Amino acid sequence: MTRPNSALVLRRASERLSAGAAAVALTLLTLLTFDVRAAEREAAPAKVIVHYSDTAFGTTEGTAQVYRKLKTAARRVCGINDGGRLTLDQGIAARKCFDTALADAVRRIDRPMLTSVHTKYTRDLG
Image (cartoon, rainbow, N blue to C red; front, side, top):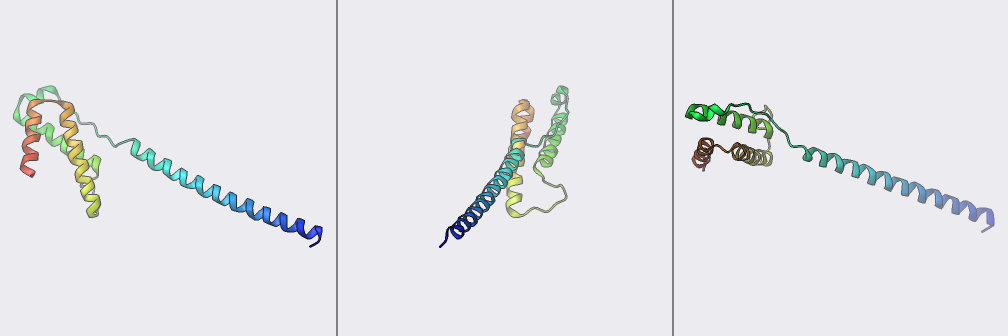
């Protein structure tokens, strides 16, 4: 090989290597972007505000009404009954989400009558 040919071969090899490295780098950056977006969605759980008064827990009917509101909010947060069809796996995940959200709300409110209503509801399901 002559000197001009070897320089041409080296230049082409260098160009191919640079193009390959750029493609790999672009692919990795794209994958990292999707990972970050997925993590952002999970970082901010959905919330629904439920309004109630402390006097509602003075009666059985008032407590039952607050509990119905909590169940509706948990369904909305977890995507149950929003008009779309769920696969079996999605339905199982949504039900688990609902159970957890409802139990957490009852625990945070921490009223004996509400806890009693929730305990009866979960016992009747099982």
